[in-house]
Image (cartoon, rainbow, N blue to C red; front, side, top):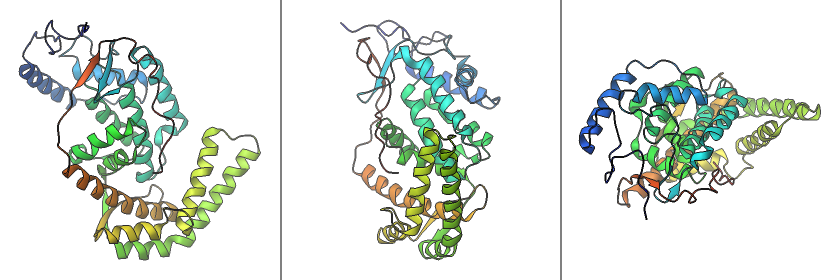
Length: 335
């Protein structure tokens, strides 16, 4: 027998609310009005588990008694279970500890920030801390995280298609589309033609290779001195992969990426800015811009062939259904 969702009125899927509204449409209108009003006066919250709780409470304090409190039911969407309710608090603390290990994504170019932010947001989506309002909390948290890291996001530029499809793919550890959805919101951006990107990358190549080799030497020295960690080892692998791409020995070489963009019919694409103006950041931005353009075009074509229906988030009645669900799959595809 299905268990009643304790967050809803009996024999209803309408959430219990402070006004006692039992009409879905009336509650949605009330919730939208109140959260928008609160969002207009949004304080800066720290990037932490408590900060996310405070953000949720600020937005939904006029609507729900449980605003800012972690959910006490198991939930799923489109057959994908979110993290078990009993693991939410610990997982959220762990997620922000991981963020701190990466300096809260500060000191990165816009593209590198987008990539790190996608991993962070993907984990938050999987943890799904609250019974309702997770999407709005995540977007405002992302906006503040970007600002604190030295970047500017324009939330009005969010594209629902790539964001929603990217969020679903990220639950299976494919964060490519979510990375692109975040990058689309970053300002400023500049437009370059494929020919211009090829010319600029050629001019930047020698300096970029030199910068990366210096970073590789520095990272190896740190490891040899016993100051390395799993994070340091991953940084070294990423640097080696980045070098292979620039030198044309990696499978995602710049020349191949630009060629695919041209073959796809892309004439120009948007490029984000580098944080420190380095040749390494500049050439990375050109490559990421081309990849983003190609993969967003592919996503748009794929989405056009699918029937678009918004799946509701459901409460799992069986408390054992997600007992073993602790984290996303560990294998990560090439990005």
